[in-house]
Length: 292
Length: 272
Ligand SMILES: Nc1ncnc2c1ncn2[C@@H]1O[C@H](COP(=O)(O)OP(=O)(O)OP(=O)(O)O)[C@@H](O)[C@H]1O
Ligand SMILES: [Mg+2]
Image (tube, rainbow over all chains, first blue to last red; front, top):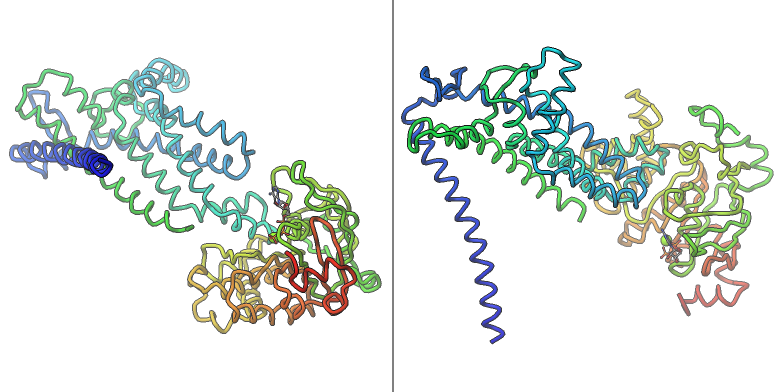
């Protein structure tokens, strides 16, 4: 009886693992299948070189660059906000803050990532953009600047929390060795602790980038829906994710070329996040064994 | 004292005359340490002689490390740490509010129980303390790195791959690297907390020889659980028991004619 129970539990666990794998494979194959059909009609060369993305207009162009530039722009702004703030927080929490402070503040920061992103989106659109328009009068109502800034705040905990874990895992002996030679806390933090934790910090940054690239609601709500090949943060743009939402919610005909653009855009997005996640996974595996 | 004043001058050592006269490098007066409510060191007074090796022995948990780490203020960052009493190095009370802890630690180096090289190259490990002080001249760094590695008897083994990661060295080599790293800063006191307890007998012998040679220039305090080691390398031995200093005298005297029953029991292995 006991043996049967054990076997049953084992089978259940195995089944759920297999289901997960199957679903992933399923999603990827649908993506790939539809993308292949898309590329039968549109040349890959045009897809990556055409500077316009207008599948929904009569003069159709299928250049992904405007969507990529939109995604790149919002993510870059987000990272340039989240990286310095997130790293400062992690260094402060791990090297300076009293234990009790660290214990209360860290979960509170992680709450930032738990707020529904649509809330961030409207926060960007209704509060941040009007405020920024007070400073930059030529800022459009939809723009990548405020979407990027707000997204940066959202991804702070990805950087601060994972980096802090990495910093905290650096053995106390290394810090003491540094103090013992007359180094200050600041010198120790930047010359010993941060380099020793660098792989963990890089992982945190990659995950944050990956999260920023995949973020949908904030950019869909606040950055606009105008594919535009530009690095100007003041004007409306469209990201890959926002485009996918736009078309999915619209009434394009199932099986049409417009419909397949979703998958072409989707597989591009997937390729990016897949590569980023793979890199971070590799680094993480290497670094896990470092202090054992 | 200078330690208090300009940061970059390294004038912690007092004038040589008075040092020679008093023959005391570190003078401890009624030192007491608490971790929260727990009293780990219960009023210890002792004088430590310059250019000698002093061994701290005693059962586990009796406060040897805590006491040793008072001399470079390494306990300062520990939660709940509190101390009373006076510790003077070369006549200066190192717990004076005006003391630059960083300057003190350049004067009082430390080697730890487990070899703890930085995950950097061999060269960078030894140059670390110098770079911290703002020394960036490549020639100066090179020569001081070499000097320190020679002093630590490691130069011949590593001179061809200074760029190699320190983590690739053996445990014994790592510990000698840690000693070199400490020597590079040119302290006058070196604290060693069980520096050979994680090492094999051959590496241990190498480090003991090293310590023996270093005492000409340095004042060395070594915590050890190894009675033979204490009797081999130290000039003076202090026996601690539950936060108190039980007996402190010339090593030879302490090991051959201990005054206290407790010391005798400990060194003959009857307890602890
Ligand atoms: N950070 C700390 N917080 C609270 N208590 C501590 C702390 N460090 C040490 N103690 C306690 O203080 C006492 C002395 O510890 P210490 O490490 O100085 O002993 P020790 O003689 O070096 O022992 P060992 O030979 O095992 O290294 C012990 O009872 C220990 O439990
Ligand atoms: Mg100890």
